[in-house]
Length: 435
Image 1 (tube, rainbow, N blue to C red):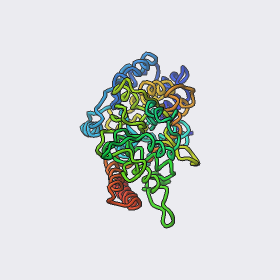
Image 2: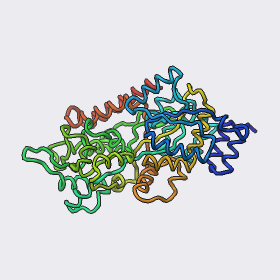
Image 3: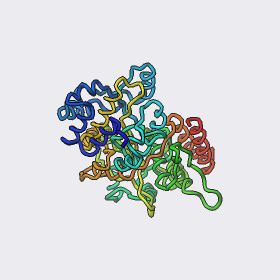
Image 4: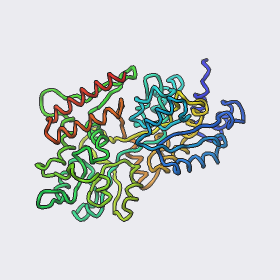
């Protein structure tokens, strides 16, 4: 029988249950009781708040002395990718770094994968939520997922109640009617109070994620994964007949920025969507679960709540979009074995749940998502369970693609179908350049 690798033993022990038995198996696997010296110094890079991550690490260290030499460095999100690439090129980077799902394929060449002999695709999908699938690479698992940040609906209680609504819309086809009742304009047609921030790109922080959610709820794949692990563009148009579901998704998103529509509710001249919501000038804001603390800090007196993302009425399945996060071991790591061990230990059910709580998002582990929780955490878990994330070949190239698709449609520079066809063609070109 083939001998299992060190990491496979570690991983199976951790995922089985990181209790006394799991720790003992781990200790035996690395060669006895002196596991701290075996793991050694491991530096983790990420963009999450240092105090939140350090709090989890401190607790984990108290429970497991093997983690005493593990440290976390918070990096600036805007320059994270560049800083990471530069540091790894100079062999001065971290031993472990946090990899966001939309950068998984782009950064795959930088990491040491977990082979499918160590952990099969089926095992991976049984352990982790579907949102973690972008980490399934061509030659192995790119990184070990630990958290998911789903899209949710933030709603202003005061605005909706003043219009006679006790709860926010649960279906997208209710939003236009709500918009007609809530949106307020001045005599010149300028929007004074908006219902929902849809239709533009520049002043909507999550425009790409929102349109991705609408497309995937309509069962329109943006990319697909072939049997050999490579990806292909899938944002194509139906030929002939009535407009496609992709047309309908793009039309729905952009119509809220069309002054000729009765549900006109947003324009490119307005402030950012998040700021508008925090200021009490926007009734509905689609944002990530992780934005809740920021919104609260922007306006502590805002009478707001969080709800599930609206769905398509009559759809065969409910769906959401979000971001996943995972621990990746760079090829330039000075301590890859220790880094793999730390990643496995931090992704135990207990620690993964603690990280999720500390960051205000959800765990990526199905076992943790099955545990009962209350309040906003219950909504976050509910959305995480139905979150699907398309494999993005390179956000630095696909972000402009989404911007052009939205802005060309709103400006009238391109018909809906043409904007979508061009986006599909550009996606194919981006992918062909990557593979």
